[in-house]
Amino acid sequence: MSGTRYGDDVDALDAWTRLADEYVDEVQDPENRYYVYHVNRLLIGRRLLDRSGLIRHGAQGLDFGCGDGVLMERLLADGCVMEGTDIAPAMIERARRRLEGTGCPLSVGGIEQLAKLPAGRFDFIVALNVLAYFTPDEETRFFSEVSRILKPGGGLLVSNVNALFDLYTLNSFTREFLNREFWEAASVDASALLTHPELPQRTDYAVKANPLSYREVLRGFGLAERDRDFFNFHRIAPLLVPDGHTLNDYLVVDVDELDRIPEWKRMLACSTYFSLSVKE
Ligand SMILES: C[S@@+](CC[C@H](N)C(=O)[O-])C[C@H]1O[C@@H](n2cnc3c(N)ncnc32)[C@H](O)[C@@H]1O
Image 1 (tube, helix red, strand yellow):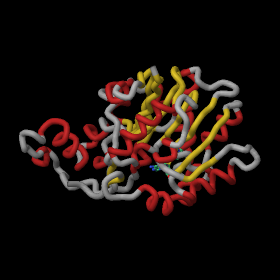
Image 2: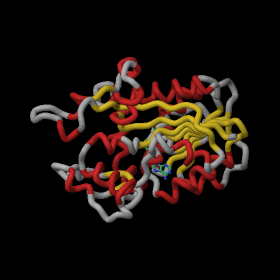
Image 3: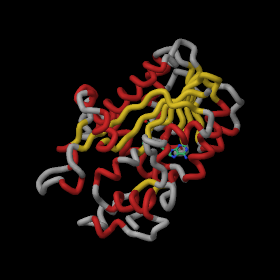
Image 4: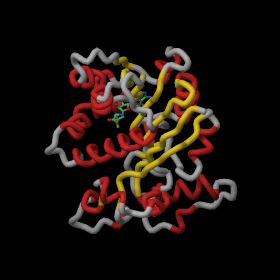
């Protein structure tokens, strides 16, 4: 086994209460080294929403796991009627500051908040980089609730951890992927194939999305995947980064540059997967 995992042994509320300040700096401070990453991932999300035709004046939208409200601010500017919810009070406090004067309703909470909302309420729901912090049970409840509270024809945009990236990294996550997806029943362990079977030890995620099968997962909840994109391209597997360099030296986050990389390569070597689906 690799190290700890969100959704198994790391509590999202604890983690995000701790991470809030650091995260908001990343999103809001142009001097922060991750700022460009956030600018570009939001562009990718925005482009998928634009292509979907869901963004129009008066459209009712929900940002689930809204963080500091960066996306809501833009959607409000487009005339959407937004509301936001997030499990971490510290994040909602930051969103309140950012959205002061807009009248946008914000609430603290997790999946249970969705159960309080009436059926068929929203034209679209966004949850960017949120599902990775769910337990598998929360993921199931999320999709059920989303399907209930979306209007027919309404859309869901999620960005998630790309499970296929584990095949590209040739590390402990690759071992987990191969054991889980192929060899568990045969009691064979992929460790023998890997040079560094114990690495990495950083926090992993219980919930990831496999772009090759996500369509079927969504279909189980009455959602049809209509569009997708990939983000955060690793030019080489993280364990191959040479001494004296950082992972960042080998990342592609610029949207134009990403667009020039063939999709099959992005599907494997991007760590983030965006999926846009529509309630049938
Ligand atoms: C990486 S941040 C993304 C914030 C925002 N969606 C964005 O794209 O800028 C993840 C957010 O998800 C929230 N979150 C994690 N688990 C959650 C849950 N079970 N319910 C609601 N929010 C959750 C965290 O508090 C945090 O604000």
